[in-house]
Amino acid sequence: MPLVPASVDFRRCRLLGLIGSAALAAGGTTAGALPIRDVLSPSAAGAALGLVGVYFGVVLLIAAWALLGREIRGPEPPAPRSLLLVLALWAAPLVVAPPLFSRDVYSYLAQGAMVDAHIDVYAYGPARLGGPLVSEVAPIWRHTGAPYGPVFLSLAKVTADLTRTEVSAGVLGMRFVALLGVALMAAALPRLARHCGTDPAAALWLGALNPLVLLHLVAGAHNDAVMLGLLGVGLVAASGRWHLLGAVLVTLAALVKAPAALGLLAVVALRARGRTGRHRVLRAALTTAAAALTTTVVATAVAGTGYGWIGALKTPVSPQNWALTSVLGRVTGDLLHHAGSDLAPLAAPAWHGIGIAATLVAVLVIWLRRPRPAPVYAVGLSLAAIAVLGPAIRPWYVLWGLFLIAAAAPSSSVRRRVAAVSGVLALAALPSGGPVDTQQLALAVSGGALAVVVLWQVHQSTRQPAGLPGPREPEPSV
Image 1 (cartoon, rainbow, N blue to C red):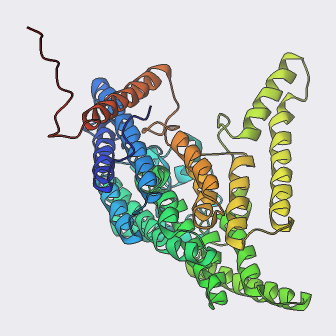
Image 2: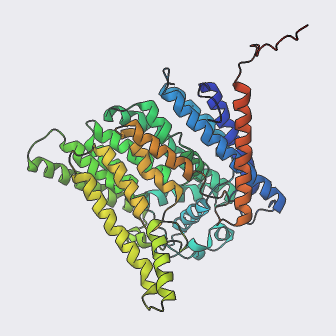
Image 3: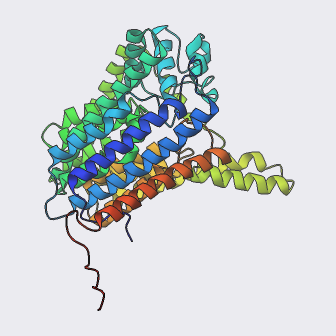
């Protein structure tokens, strides 16, 4: 039996999501990825209560999102403009909350300060910068170069310069950058959906109102928002008559994070669409490549960071991450170690190599199969393959493919499966961005269980409309 009735209206969904995001923000003030040097560091009891509050809010937000999906599939679905207002409403409490679910925003700020100080961010980690900001960066990233392109590092540099690397102001500045990316995503989704012949409201629901967007792109301020925003508007331009502009924008997205470069395949396909002859396809490919190369050279020269980001793509990953190939590498390595084999250290690199090969095969199959999928959908599936088969995975990596799948999925069943994955992954990270332990897991489950109880009470209270009499008691016989 569902926790709340299917007749819950749009206004109630909106309110439930707002309560969820407000609980998230409130809980984050003691359980989030707070500055280590904060003189108002919470007590253990406060952090525990905050963790319960965060997961209480997450479950409410997921429930509101799922119920909103029912409204979209109903006889009178809300208009895209109404959904954009819901996105703004749900995101508002998270804009002023501390960083949640990751400490990456501190790395961004430190890397921007390094560029501002003329330190090579590709040769050195934030530890080279020195100062109080370094202590806020997660230990694994303090001595590793930045894997990001010059476009994002330029944005981080401007933010660090304007905020004078003051931590709280810098976090708000980086979140503002992420919000610009989310705004571009929300603007691109309905247009891409119309081009692909799908429902714009359904695209917005899955691709922009998704809890993963709110938790990780808004609350976590991840630079994936900028990458996806530029990728989306670039594909919108390429879907019309602005193919060169589309190539430029998609290249700028790749100069934030490299996976977006796959969008150039869609630009070529869209430019060559409806044309016959191999020379026309070749001409489209050469024109797109020239635009991408020119954009890369100009953006790199303006940023002044050099091309070290190409070599920095091999930045090490956390040895305990839950990517498929990393898990297989750890299991294989342990088995070989217990067997006394000297090949144990090679297990993880071997599986990572297999993952890269499998990714290349998957991308080729996606683009060459018959019938060929729409270019936007093919890019979405390709980015999803990179996220799943790569050597590292984080919940927000799923958004790489999900964003375009939301706009171009050929059936509602695809959206439902992707939505189910999103709901599960929304519960997969702690608000502090640290590893999970038994006590924190128990607190998170308690917060989620409390939300389920509240939802059940809502269900019980709405089973019988207010003001209507219940069943009449039988009168006693005389």
